[in-house]
Figure 1 (tube, rainbow, N blue to C red):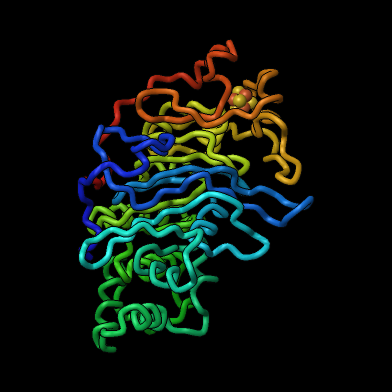
Figure 2 (figure 1 turned 90 degrees about the vertical axis):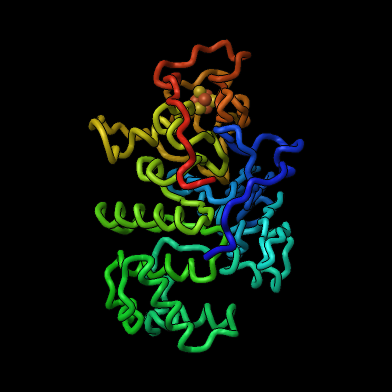
Length: 383
Ligand code: SF4
């Protein structure tokens, strides 16, 4: 794995005039591997249309980890399935662009808009430049094929010059990278534990040295110990090979272990985006605070788990103002009338969509949402 070493480069278009798309905490300008601009996804059309992802703008730098958090139905999985063009009908991309900056073997970088890419362009970039690990490895792996065939199919298609022996050696190397022995190649998926199957999926995703790996709740179905082991292994692999990662989960305390930045989604929109540690220790949006109070911390003092009252809104009939207003302890009159937009609220690049942070609201920010952010740490494994 060598093609994805991060490089300090010129400013990209994201710094050249577009709205801010993510925190740059240490002042360095890094190359983007992915830019999502004003991206929207609908289910159905006409009167029955439901907007599942609404005007999402995000940027991910090379070798960094972007965590996307939110409850079920927040739109986080729809976002990544749509952006990789894996979303099935009746899902439909209704606006925006997704630019993947593809590095070829000579080091030249070419932007590919995944939204308008042809099927042959998509075949060229999938696995080689962007790969995805799904939530359930049992349904992602073919139950009647031995594990070795999963590797063989990918390598045969994208590396036709490799001999059978070379493909076998590469598959064994990939399994070793995720802590499994080569004899697992002879097994069927049902002969492996849940953690082993998920490790196999991660190894397959890394087979072609992708620049970006998307992980859709890869540890959700696993026990806590296995979750921690896999998170630790992913951190090691990323530091070693330099791929960027999008990691989706509903568990913020898990995400803070791995991510450099976190975007919190609610009802199809991003409501807060910040450096992982800042967001974890000093949340600004009431929904982020509610999510943090829904899971036990992995380290430190125990805290009372209070959860979030109520349920997410019906996206077929969304509220007029802030989508979170019916569940928000700090809602004001303005909140039910006007929808807040994502704006930067401090000099770390943190953005929040909440009227509490708009001076025109004349509101005082509650103490729970105004803790002092910790000093930014050096990026995890980045340049
Ligand atoms: Fe709560 Fe209002 Fe902020 Fe929405 S805009 S999260 S309702 S305070």
